[in-house]
Image (cartoon, rainbow, N blue to C red; front, side):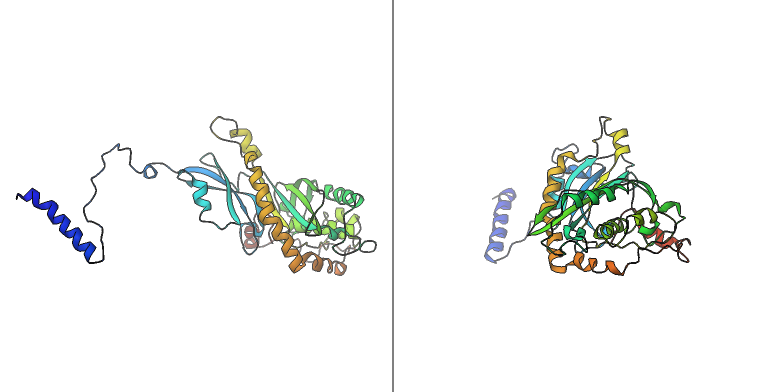
Length: 347
């Protein structure tokens, strides 16, 4: 028998010993080296990373950071290898209440925070928050009337335009230029019933928001509609004097959409990049809200009664104070507080 004929026999004996002994190891023989240009070469080692944005939705209950609220349309930018089925692979590592709903290629210098023109938030609340303290029932049987909804929308529309919102945050003095913020629109949608409790959604779109600003905007309108504060307090709150503005609970606050209108005008139709409008993802966004965000708000409100408890604190607010800004309110806020504020409303 020649040496070449002995090699297969030796390999067979080794395999037989491995099986009979009850254990197996991988052969140490290395696979043949692939030649350059081989079609089986791993493509991700050669592909450059590309700048993209991800459309994210998440239920914020139990988490901190990323504005401290839930989101149906958060947008983040990053560089990735654009591998096949990338969204499915990312989502496979996330819990069901955190989803990546869409992906788009963007310019190399794109930054989702700096390129943002405006943000739209929604605030979901039980409609008994608008029940008048002297005329209406103050429980779950309350239903919002057409007249009261019109009053709410008339008051919310007063926020449109540029105003000094120093009374709507704890971090700005009345003479700081950054306290002036531009609101594009604010309105309350038609109410709906969930689990026997009527809710409504307030939407507000603005260029930017300060800490607690939206919750205080909602809180002051609630106080007026319920009859605790006169309508005149709304305009007075934009002046330099200190006004006691109540802050509505954080439960119902949701980041609805991030707008990139200037970016879309410049790059959205250049033939290389898609506009960041997410029209094709609207169905996914709506489904996520219905499955995760709205049920969480409803169940938490029923269990913790955050709105009902907050409404009980409205009588202790002094809406008639006419004194000028209290000492120190127009002093410069320390830079550490300013830098931690961010552009969005936080809890």
